[in-house]
Image 1 (cartoon, protein in one colour):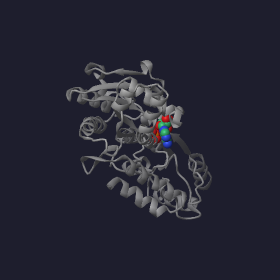
Image 2 (image 1 turned 90 degrees about the horizontal axis):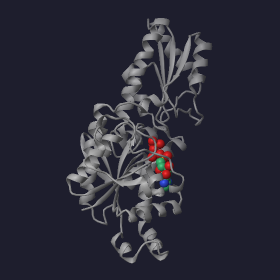
Image 3 (image 1 turned 180 degrees about the vertical axis):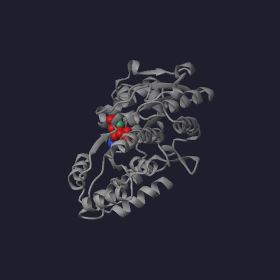
Image 4 (image 1 turned 45 degrees about the horizontal axis):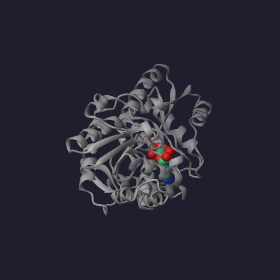
Length: 367
Ligand code: ATP
């Protein structure tokens, strides 16, 4: 019988609520006690009323709600050793011996760090007299399970992160709406989508909306004079009878020298070189808001259930797992490996090895 803390951390994503609901209910069904930790790691550091036991009925209605009902935050204190030590103290005080973290790569890195440092924190807290010897003996290790809640779909170890499908759906709806007005006026649109350093949302949005041109961080334009090449491509499709031009750009788009490519710059190029009436639409937070799509309700639910099973299966030697989905099957893989593999993509981009970055990104979805 475990006491399982649940928190959501980093940027919110549709599907986090279904995931929290599944953890709570599966925990209760398996005779464990679930605890909400409100506002991500901030709640862990603050303790007090930010940590409380969750009942079955507390998560009623969570399945269809966007965002995260238990709150999320970016917590500076948790990045420091002292902050994490206070978090350990609050977990022990509440009798929590397993933790489920739903967040992006930053949150999961923090989780893995907490687990690695755990024995050291317990020893220090015991020496400082903040916990008793019995508590120190009882809480020798902490089991942590991660799930990737992020609209960016940027983490290795899973084909889809929780939230990515809903965000893509919202992007497609928005671009469809833009295209009908663009067509009426024969306008060009530059649509900027989220994704941080990952081009998954932009790439899939471009395929799904029939965009004319695409910019993603992993594959910057090959030509030095990419502006001319873009204009040529767009003009060719206008010449072939198309009434609109659509450019999708990821917010992290860069050129081959790692300089950011800005939406406004593309607009100016299309306006000055081609004379198109060009507008920029930055979709912004609408992408991460609203109700989760079916797939994120499903993914959050089955992963949440599996997270509880993974906790019950684990021994103190089991490496912290991350729950994912590969080729339609739920998977459990070491969190550390997933984070390392994800980090390699950023390193390849930094080294301007773009083919390697693309290869790694593709492999990371298949690993
Ligand atoms: P998203 O992908 O949506 O931005 P994320 O989880 O990557 O989500 P971050 O802001 O990177 O978002 O991380 C969320 C929180 O996790 C941070 O505010 C911090 O409290 C904790 N965290 C992140 N990185 C670390 C780290 N290296 N060590 C300890 N804690 C960390």
